[in-house]
View 1 (cartoon, rainbow, N blue to C red):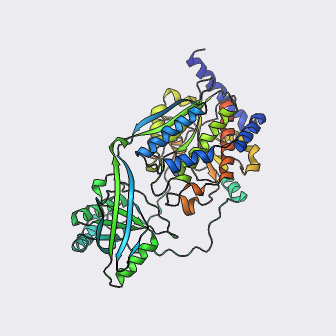
View 2: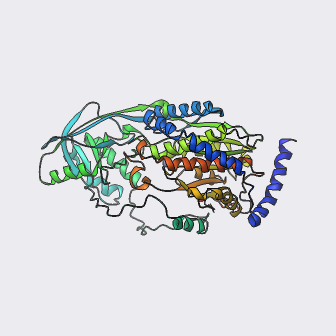
View 3: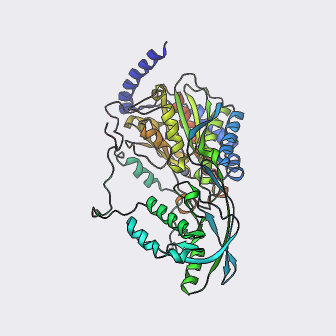
Length: 531
Ligand SMILES: [Zn+2]
């Protein structure tokens, strides 16, 4: 049968199936394989070993860094050793150099001697040897216009020359009396599952107060650029930001131009040290600090890579799963998202170990550039699938993409971009895992960019699936922070997640039809576009 007639036939049967499933959803679950998956996952788990290598050996893994590339290459080799095929590093154009911090020493020299706890801000330059200088603290106006900020900074020009500059007031972080819960209550998950699907059209109305048209406050990006331009021109030596979080936790992001030439050496200092220096300065003390920062740039990182490998199916249809391998740099990126990668890798390892022969190819992707706005997965979708509006040939052959990127917590439910029939099928696929805490699936109509790589697929109109997980310490401690290390992984939870992913992807790869997707008439419009 020719490719053409084959796809046509699929189109017709898929339509009939949607009608059928939405009324009498009845997935034929292969309980024997589900049992084998549980057996292999619990008696022979490789997850911790994988997570150890991705974090301790290759972390941190910022986009464009040699660490990330080496982690991807190791993963591909590992996947091939488990029997996966077509392992490859697929390049895409990221356009910015790679960056890594190699060394950071931070000290207060006077009026008291002590070390300080800091992280470098990514894509800023190093100090080119130790820099010892007096500290000054400046504040910035709230939502200034370009001219207001210029006037404000101009008055500070003399004060910052040759100095180490603390930018902003010390943030008062109050004591947390009630830590957020590590687990989601069943009723919270059920509430999420029973809520009406997220709307697919338009952008929610802005909650910001309307601004008089003659006043044009700077965006954060513009403000940041103008402050750096000033600090460079005024001859400031080092910039210090307040981490603004408790217990020494530091979330360090990037100079958002990704160009160290447009910044000065910058650290994010733990809130407690920032407060100490602020209080000493306001006592009128002369505070002297010293920073020694070595950052390195990698021009070859302008090309970044998604790591790909497959379990070959017997048809040309595909089911994908994955998560992002890139991380922030303040720790080794364990819960964000080495562990998601390790879980997805474990899922395909399990399927290989129990020798499944899927109808559809099961393709694993470990993305890069997620932290910069899902750039790796978006590039992949563009290259391979196109969009609903401008599809490539493979567009109709992808059944679904399943994403995992919410820390170490066990999977509790899944959300699919698609019609109710897709959620019904997925819900039945997951039903045998109630004992592991999985409570079902729901659907969304949103083609908005969301917070992880599933939305690169949903944006294009493809069935992106995202896993809801227990938070454990993700939002409170580990997300993008200097505390995101291997130690924060909960083995019991990640084994459960691997079982659920392996079984779901297996079922989607073997069920008669692809997962139901929106018909032409049902497909939500892309936000912010005319068609
Ligand atoms: Zn992430």
